[in-house]
Length: 340
Image 1 (cartoon, rainbow, N blue to C red):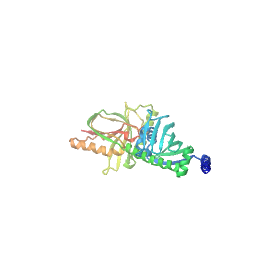
Image 2 (cartoon, rainbow, N blue to C red; image 1 turned 180 degrees about the horizontal axis):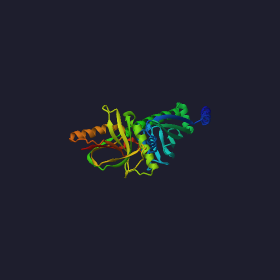
Image 3 (cartoon, helix red, strand yellow; image 1 turned 45 degrees about the horizontal axis):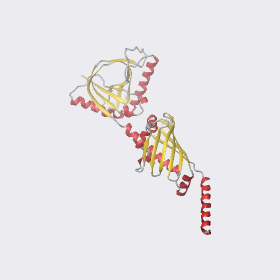
Image 4 (cartoon, rainbow, N blue to C red; image 1 turned 90 degrees about the vertical axis):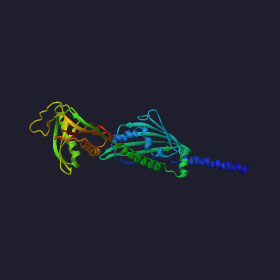
């Protein structure tokens, strides 16, 4: 009996000593990672800020033993994401938002042998070709969790870094799919009303066309603002002439106005008039890289229906502003090929 008593006392001392030892260990952990996502910052922020999007790309949600549920509020401060897995259960709550700049989440995890709390901060910085995503996590463990991670050699900081890296990569793939969605609708033969427009003309290689057209359109907008001239329609490009291999183009960037505008003898911005007429119209919803496909559909419609192009140059109308439309899949462009 004495031997059992001594063994019990020894075990009790070891347990107390172990508890004291582990309680004195630092249970904090933190890590930071930076990743470039080739998507507009507005789109990245919207994807991260709404828990209803997470199922498709959150790395842990891809495991079969993982399930999640959402609160009625899926986005905004106090939105809650609740998860269950073989590693434990927990919640992720939106704590702070700075639109298109940063998001902060509070993470509470109740594992098999202990609890952990952490703060995940995500900062977004606009880059020339996308968004720099900086993810930083800082957390702490209770006694049970410290014992478990010490005995198993688990590296929470490394585990989180791997999880975040894979999550951001998954999200980028999902965003790429969303940004590449397109629809091309052949509207057929329509009547267009014509009217006055302010324009600037230039020649360009097709490689430099987009940049030059954007600059010219902005100059026209600035001119209109300085002279209190209202727009009377969406910006457009009139294709005056292509060379044979279609590597160079003479074009006009234009913005419709209600009435004739006298711009001055030395002004590079002029006022033109488009007569009403008939045209084959095709509407593209999607990235501008799909315009060639849309033009081919318009040309095919003309051939199949035995139509003949008029001498009036074809033109594109840009119904959406790329600076105000985060997802390029929502760009709306109308193509008009005038018909005799």
